[in-house]
Length: 393
Image 1 (tube, helix red, strand yellow):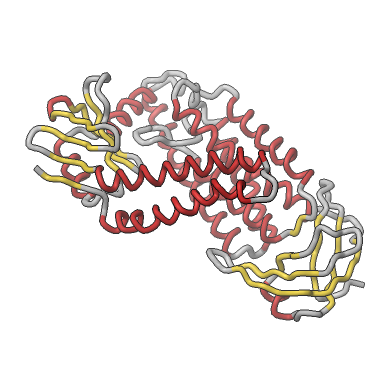
Image 2 (cartoon, rainbow, N blue to C red):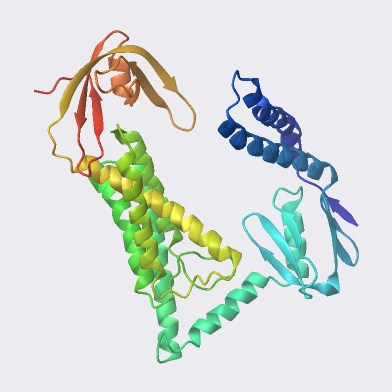
């Protein structure tokens, strides 16, 4: 018999962090009752969050103490918070691996599958043992699915033609996904020339959508484990994230009111195009809903970044000039270092009191210096502004 528990590093981390988070979220739950006047809206928001997070942390601690995976001579045993699952070796159909778990699948659908977390101590040893003992159902599924593709006469009149089309589809998706990753790195880390970098992030997701639509169902949005269909998911995700980051850090938007509907409209339009005559998502599995929700989120990021970029880049409106005095400076550090200036009010533009600026501008100016602010209407009627230490003629 061999027994495995969660890896020691993760166990120590959870034992340290969970009590602190329980205290933090517990305090959050009682905070609304320590004000002079109880805000019912705040109570309805904070209490469920507090209860949910405290419960989650408590379950995490119980799982650390109780949870384990056991390999016996003739069976596998998984001990969880509420249930203990057992599968004899002769009851096991095979296994499937995802990014987070190994799933041991029983032959009998009435029995529950065993789930093994990647955070288990000795995870790789367990995976190696299972791979030597049982069938990889992902490989089986992919082989069956590929045969289904090669037998589908709607894809081509001969098997040789269908094989060629599938091979070409895989080559295309590799290229498009690679371009998406390159665009992300270019846009995020070294956006020069700027317009070309951003243009790549604008174009590649649209190209990915068109690739899906003109592939006769061979190219899919996502590629679940065990799927034989190639996917362009990276070409949708990475450029959209890069575009979103650039729009947030490169442009100061004064009022986002006109951003939301426009970005949602772009998201819905692209989702509609993807949904026309497609065979991938039928909404009869939980995975379908997760896929469409994830794609919708990234397409919204794409829409958001696109709207901001086009609004500011194409804006030819006459700028409105203001001056302000720098009251304070601060630097925010983390995964990304940001530089902020606190300014005096700007007449009617009272909403601006702190703005993010470039590193160069931050170190060129000092507290009590005067600084110039130029407001513009925006091509898409989304007002934005530029902060600079130089006065334009």
